[in-house]
Image (cartoon, rainbow, N blue to C red; front, side):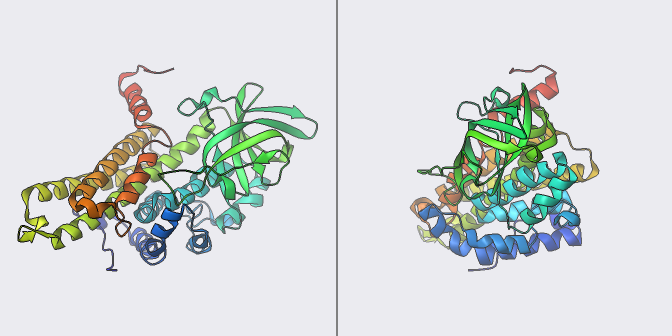
Length: 389
């Protein structure tokens, strides 16, 4: 397999620091050497490649932006974004695993937890000794998380939680779960631990997308949770939405990596595939498709870079993250489909990454806020009028 050189038509590398490029190149090499050779086998089998966890921890990919005292690598947000880009070039499921561990488990514990909770969980999560998941979506409440019916009630020494969560990445292999429930009418964050009586996480089977990722339900049947497992500063719906914003940021970068993989495969195929006595890359329609894909990659890269710079400077608005997530997921999915067209019947084979990325992107476009919900978030921002309740 030839070395992946990246896709950089506008010399965006010149806008990156040496440290950012080093992080990107390190993860790029890891993806090429460790993920791509095994990912099709796991995707077809519907299994998550758990053997990658120790190596990803060794590369400081879990909670990489957090302080070193908690096991983080203190990366800036552009470097973190580049990590997500390269991981999803390998597979959306692997990027999802790291994204959940970092943005949806370590971030809320760091942001909303007390000092004891941070020291109790974050270093082990950073080392991959603990795996986490995030429980917000319910069977009947996805785009409207405020309608959740999972409920926590105070009792002697802690709380009792009843309810169910759905579409939970990492759920069945997780040691802890950051779960959101209504406590006295207000949304509250809790940390549930594997083995608590009444807490189960059955894996969801039969997926045609994100097959190299564990997706589960979380079922809480009168689960007792001690007082120490309540995240004291995670009060109100704003708290889980802050977590989702972190995840959406990573997705905007990640799907760009998936599109880069599809473009690279389609370009190399088009240059070698001969029909009517010439390579199909020499035909106008094929060139138009490749140019359109490259243009969308470049636009996404530039949007992501500015998004990261805004995040690092503290000037980022969540509406901007919605725009990047919305745009980049849509263009990545459309680009994957075009890549399949270029490759014809060969595009459906596991020998190439196209169909796997395309199927994965169908899910990524939907989770952490659908295309339509991000449209309405931006629409409200620019008009001042909410189109949904």
